[in-house]
Amino acid sequence: MADKIVIMLLNLDLNVPGTLGAPFFQATVAAAMDIEVEIYFAARTTRLLIRGEAEKIYPGNAQQKSVYSFMQDAHESGARFYACAGAMDENGLTLDNAIAELDGVRGGGAFIGEVVEDNVATLTY
View 1 (cartoon, one colour):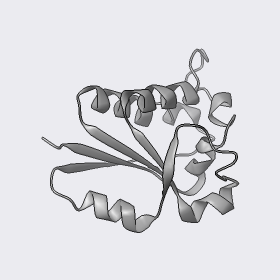
View 2 (tube, rainbow, N blue to C red):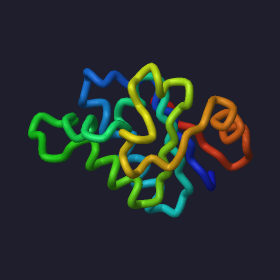
View 3 (cartoon, rainbow, N blue to C red):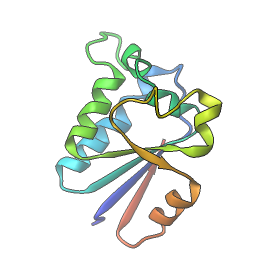
C-alpha cells in the first residue's frame, strides 16, 4: 500500500462543476486513512486557490456544498495544497489573493520528484 498520494489537478474543467468535488473527497478519505496527501493545482485549476472562487462553484445541482467546502474538508484532514508556479500569473493567483489553505508554491520538478518515489501513488484529474 502507498504511504503517500500525490494528486495533480490539471485537466479539470472549471465549467463542469460536477467533476470538481471528487478529487477533494478522495483526498479527504485518503488523509483519514493516514495516507499523506499532496494536491498540485496546475493550469486553470489554480483559479480554485483564489479567495472566493471555489466558494461560488457547486458540484451538485442541490448546491448544498461548495467546492471550497470540499477543499476545506481535505485540508483539515491533512491534505496539503500546492500551486504551480508557472500557472499563477496566467490565472490571476497571487500569494495576496490566495486562500488560507494554500501550503506553498511548487513547480513541475517538485511534482515529478514526488511521483517517482517508492510507495507513492499518483492520481490525475
